[in-house]
Length: 421
RNA sequence: GGAGAGGUGUCUGAGUGGUUGAAAGAGCUAGUCUCGAAAACUAGUGUACUCGUAAGGGUAUCGAGAGUUCGAAUCUCUCCCUCUCCGCCA
Image (cartoon, rainbow, N blue to C red; front, side, top):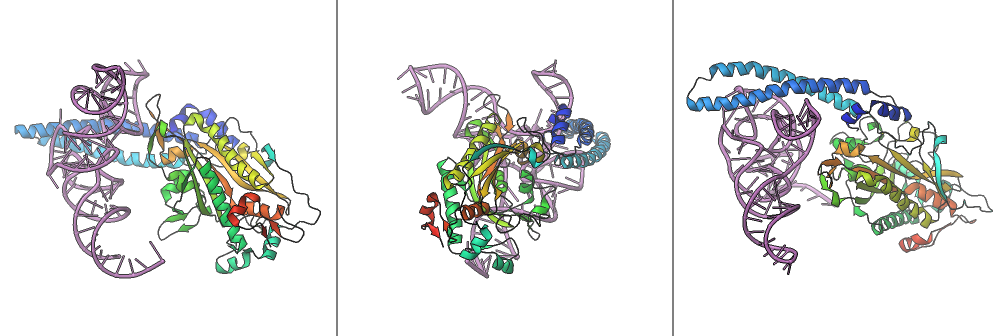
């Protein structure tokens, strides 16, 4: 959410930013509602001040044994007017809040303007695509032959997109999770184990609702959402809190399963592990002072990239253009690994700065050491990493002519085996 | 799920209709004192909205929402949460 005063004072900047994201703005509506709101507040608060003044007087008069009847009658009309105005104010407030929630975050000045994925910039490349002298298989064929991922039984037991990992497949998952979490701890992140359901407020806080409810699984009975990412519970962990500046930055790492309905994404790129309804992910979340947020974003990005380098997975880093930024993001890097069997880049991490967009919604603030005033923190997060596509790339890139798969050195202490198959 | 108790500021904890944004203590910040620290003393110390160039006003806020009243932290209703006992259970 953007600050409505900021919007009022920077109408053209906001319009431009929203247009760069290919979204339409409701700024006129916001200004109109805000004007209404201020008019009502001024009138109703003047009346309330009068009421407070008079009710103090009534107390004194009663004590003095004077007749309070006339003044009480006068107050009855004031009371009625206050009631009417309060009701109007509530409607305007609700409307204004509703419109503000639909305004996307603005892109940072360093983000390239563009409309399509072609406008994303490759800012970093690492590793070499594996060149094997035998036909490379896609991971779904490898996994099937090795018996380490069971998609078919997942369909039987749950639905498409909910695979079983079996034997060494399951152990690989566990190894990756532990490895990622250990690395995060080493780099100063506090490990957090969070709920994997959240309430409506939390979902609204990070920007999943309004509008993206359809992408989440929902338990109607208890009005809880299955989390699409640990970003939601972990960011909301400190909702409505105010920190001292010296308590920041806060850095958290959390492993959770993630649930996404992926409504409307049937068809392309959904084979095997490429797109699932349930998947595992280790997420990094930071709460930082605004002046440090872009530096912290770069650090977070390198924390994620480091894992890919250690795993020996060739990857590149994309700086996403304005048109490819999400609703909540100011700047975003995507890390994509090369999956040699499919000959495709697969997104395994998305590292974003949300500036104060989520903090304003979740009311996460800090007291500035300099001004003594409360300000909103900046929130940053990124996957480090999402498991399925890492697994897919590992299987495909590390396959042998015999259809076995070599386990990366860094994972072997965790898996206790060096080869699958 | 059933029965009971309760939710007040950073914390402990007063307060049952009329200057109560809220006693008192603790904590925190600054100052005095000190070589320094502690102690002591003094002062300050929630958040948000709104009017104002500012100084400074005003309004709201005692779990959330609604109601009664000229006036509510205090009374009524609904909901949420916590605790105790019972039930159920990984």
